[in-house]
Length: 395
Image 1 (cartoon, rainbow, N blue to C red):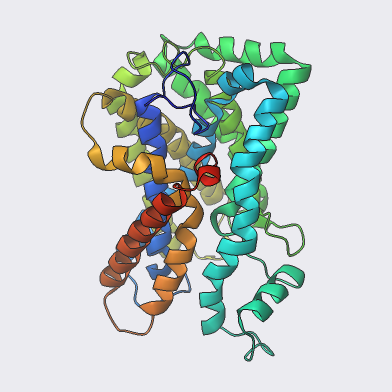
Image 2 (image 1 turned 30 degrees about the vertical axis):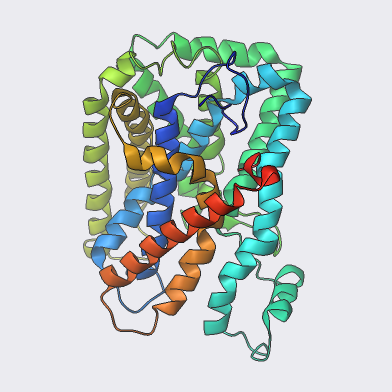
């Protein structure tokens, strides 16, 4: 089936989807569901009393790369879609595919999801609240959580900036794309260059504010993690630059040097994640001031984090490209529903966590119930929603 990179059907005269990138996006969506399914059972969190250290390692692994990678891969298709639709057509399409789901999410999906948390942790003076009282208080007083929806508004903002640059100074994007293309046959140089971008866009803010701070405008559900406020646009604009020429023959082509060297990127990623684990162990066992670690530690952790994120940004596309002709039936079956699963999964996650909260079951059992129920429920709901003509054009 030929479909555009925004998810809507178009004619066979257009370029078909690139299977490797579809699988990469679907894989990240699956990791998002895994991440949210187990985070309630980690030691660093304050969720369920049943916990397992292995989940802390999984959450640390995912959190150290996957959101930045989502912005990178989202940027790959910006230029192609802009060229085909024009600036206004592109913005209308992105407003439909990102803006409308964002509004539905923050006004419907997220309130439904967090009502389960509200039932368990009633705020003072709210014990007699029904859902509609709770909903009204959420949007008028707060707190108004965003769940996964923060990604949508940030990506939409980046798209608007990309359109502005493409409209007013297209030569900048063209030059950026050509600069990236010069590294097509120099994979190590490409990795070093991206490593520098990753470190430069992350480390200063990490040192200034730490990783726990979020920028939140009032009580409204439009936050962004402060330490990554430059990292995410850097990855997105790198994706835009890669997509400025040809995805099929450029730096991320199936036969590219980057794809051929996937074992190297994977080895880097494993080594760097090991470095992160070593630094976390040092933080818990060797540093006297746990709440305010020394500058050397914060700098080392920031370097390891940014480097691991860069390594994973090479590992996932390269591995996906090398497996392009392999059978990955689960990911391929999930792909049409991946965006919908991303949008609705929070409702299933939090309600299932609420249901299994009281039983003294092992954390692994609880998380397995939450994950299977969330993925299955979100997938089935998405399939049902996509039978509606208006919705299938959106998700």
